[in-house]
Length: 256
Image 1 (cartoon, rainbow, N blue to C red):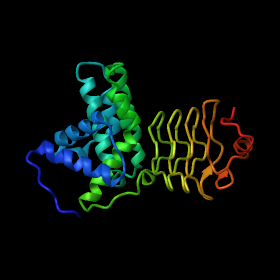
Image 2 (image 1 turned 30 degrees about the vertical axis):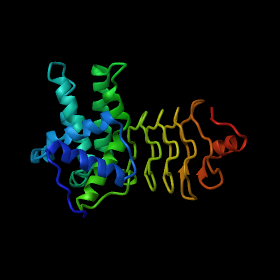
Image 3 (image 1 turned 60 degrees about the horizontal axis):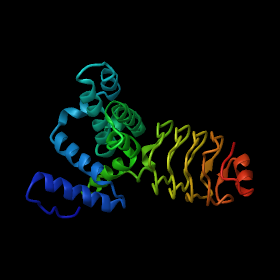
Image 4 (image 1 turned 90 degrees about the horizontal axis):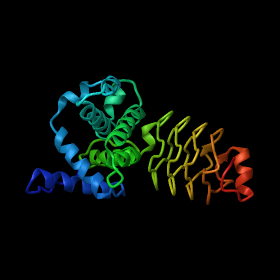
């Protein structure tokens, strides 16, 4: 654990910690996402009651129309982000996967995007897309504090996870369990898929350009369309569906 360098204000302290965590996991959030994360951490600091929340019930409650719907959806998204990143042991104790929080959190932010986002400021849409990246930054903060850290992204066990449109550019998905995951429209360019399992994942419109694969990477029975991009993949290095492999060898970027 590194010695803590004290900053003059709480805001500066959180900014410094978030910046250090990004460097530790080799990620760079844009200014809006970084600021949102800083204020989220400040807002929920010292909230032991969070661990008692049942996110599925909170999410259902937030479906009710009214002036409090936006606040409730925001709280659900924020709390799921904290659980998946800072407190993954909560999922362990409740016998659910971290992907449970990922799915509910992204859905909450997606709904906020519909309700609030404008063309010039699509903050909540970006939060939904970058949910896993922000989760990794929070995981890195655990490491800086000397807490056990899950393997970057892989330990999320994203089986049947809703990652539609997710920004997974250069993400470390080594050993990830992505069976049946919804990756429609996701950007996995340059992602590390070493030993990952994508059995029957939805890859419609997904970008898998120059992904890193291994002999244990399993891409089989997946759903594709003409927008699915497979360029720069080592065809013979991974266990790939024969139909897809044949298309790749023929130089076709997508499978119909």
